[in-house]
Length: 335
Image (cartoon, rainbow, N blue to C red; front, side):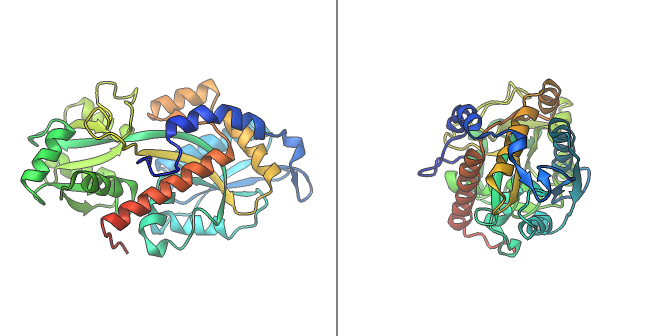
């Protein structure tokens, strides 16, 4: 998320800096050494802290396949679901820092750490950034009968009827929840939060009229937008998405300074040797530039986000601290 915290890099600044920084830090694979020779000399495990079939899992399998091709090695996906991603994340934090156990992270990596005391991991101190993969916005969607057709009208309606509007999220502490709290904090509104076990059941209840609003990834909501079951109000980012070219950005919707994206990145346990990190980073940057990967990203409504480990570190820190600020401002107590 980019809500313009002091000292944080914007996504636009980050992308402009990424190419040169990545080139200066990338090292050839032969320079990275594992326990018994050039890295990687045995299978590398990519832990996904969610169940098979989710978007994070699909991204991990694509990345594992392509990293294997680039580095002529075996990359395997290991799903360790539970506790909103905390179980798999804690496992990687406690794994040897040798480059053979990696973590495929998405927005819950920072939102859960920022909002759930029970997460029991530190995204800034227990992990070494490896590389950003891709990012894309969520989309605000509403029941078709809601008398608001854009974010300005939604905010006005929420101010007229505090607490009357309700919103379904994929669960307390996730990005779908915190983006609502961010909107409430920025606009001084009160919209009732109803946590679900995933965006899909929340979307079905919205279509059925039980709730008014959700946010979700564009691929999850696009079929319902196309068939007219729900109406899009805005994407959560500072710029429009090519997947929904007619839907305004947050800035265009009258809410400048809000830029919330769902991201995908690779992290390693803290202390992983820089040569190994740079080898992996160079490989990731090659992967996200592959035409077939770019095509897949377009279908998933995300954009490639190449860059250096340091750039990812800046992004993760800014995202985590911004969400911590939202949690504090809204006095959220989530267990």
